[in-house]
Length: 392
Ligand code: NAD
Ligand code: MG
Image (spheres, rainbow, N blue to C red):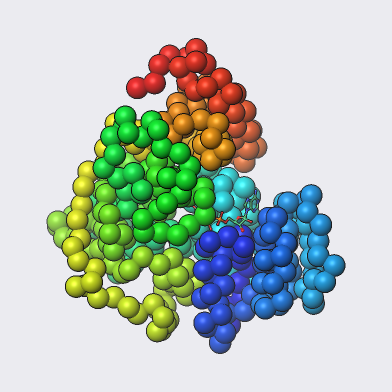
């Protein structure tokens, strides 16, 4: 039995993970479930999966009176206790945003396998996360479909044999639109993703391609390649989940119809593969055609901004990530337009991007300051009106 803690059980990835657990009762038991505010859903999940511990991270939400046989806790700190429990083998981190960083560090520091969907923790605290895994003996296995694809392509290969990673991107709902056309799009348009059904934040990130920048940074930390050896290409069908080019020119890819259940199952059982009838559906004819396009950097500047923040090192990626979280919320509330998301993040990057990072306290501080600066820029109506130059 693999004993699992699912952080963010009430979200899109969390619910998919529970679907996997539901189909494989002989393989998995659930020890911990966490949600943020959705008490009703978490209570239903707890009633079905009977974890030892249930956590509601938003301390303002009342715990349910009828919590069943599980022990209920509230607040952010409770997650850190839950992930380090001795009865947990695998921590599946499906929280959204940099809120996932401390649970990531705690799980790896305690020597757990971390099945990581929460890419923001690796973007904000990459070096710290790798250090926590090294010191604590934890194991980092990605759930992100691109990184799961790369992991699968790398099976049996040596690090020296890898020349380049090629991440695929669906292109999101605005693929093919010009920068001018994007000036007028709103949240309802951006939330309509063509191939993936996901939480709101990553859906907006997919529309701006910030998600692909976060994934390039994630790949850099996971696979140790320099940024000039990690490329991204638009692949609208989302059938090829990523590719690895080897030194001899051979290219391997991993394919399948888009479902997050496959990379979730693989992260839980890696390096084993487990039979799952529900996932064996591939049909190359039905998947055809497979096409590829370059990224339009003028229309989607958040991709390049994010990759350059990653390559800059220090605090820049954490600033980009925090600024992006604030910008996405502001866009969802219609406080700023689609293109202004890039402008307000640049304000924070200009001011804080050069800061060094020596430890967790620095990351948390720079994350806090970046949120304040980005929120100010949102109030000021973007970069141009904030008096720090004009947008590109
Ligand atoms: P979601 O919004 O559907 O779910 C997020 C979960 O985190 C919910 O359970 C929510 O209650 C909880 N949460 C929200 N804010 C929190 C906070 N401040 N503290 C603690 N818990 C909080 O998001 P999702 O789509 O499931 O994505 C989760 C993570 O997985 C993200 O990092 C995303 O980038 C990544 N991811 C998602 C997909 C996908 O298909 N949905 C694919 C690849 C990677
Ligand atoms: Mg992905």
